[in-house]
Length: 310
Ligand code: DON
Image (tube, rainbow, N blue to C red; front, side, top):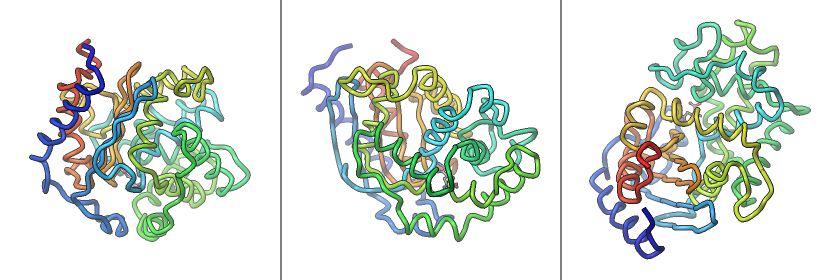
């Protein structure tokens, strides 16, 4: 279905109004104390098409930590620095019905790269001189792909999570005890948490998504920022594992490969068409934004975005 710019804008506005029924539902994440320091009813949406058209609504410049959306960056960097086989012998590729910070889905290795154990594993595979150097590389990757140099480490979020990350510490030490990586677990965890604490906004995040939707090519450029073989892995893992134990139902309802973060952000991809970023901090019990999910479901229908119904 083809819509002109005005019709797209009208349908998006209508979808946003419909999504207001989710206002006030869910709770802001509290296990990282600094995450509570937000207006729980903040709302922002950005859509960037693969041709570079942009649509922005709500507090589109508001900075938030990308949290688990950084698991895409960890996987991207690990796949850049290692072969696909090397990465996928250390981490699985299957969804799990256990929560994102569970120790249960680690048998011989983490179930997939998008639960905490998987992203801690991929973080251990990122090359660099030290944690600062490795993080600089991850952050630079994000800046390059998002087409903006605004992203930065949100120090308050980072320090707050470092002080309270007992579960992730247990996961990192457990992985090390299993021989999954040789690196110092404290340093691996530090890198993982720094990546989670990258501050961005929906505008830049949707641009990042649009590059994934554009086979890894920069928008309106012929330069490939991410190799197609890696894009294919990332987008398919987003579809199967990006929304944790809700991934199957979410894919059925929304039909877009997506990745969420506990800050309340969700990044959705429509291959060949656009990247969509939504931010609304109240979460359901699986750690996904309630209003974000609701809006993406409505938008999928209104703008004909479901990748399984073409
Ligand atoms: O490691 C954690 O628990 C957080 N930094 C990220 C978790 C997360 O975003 C889960 N997402 N919905």
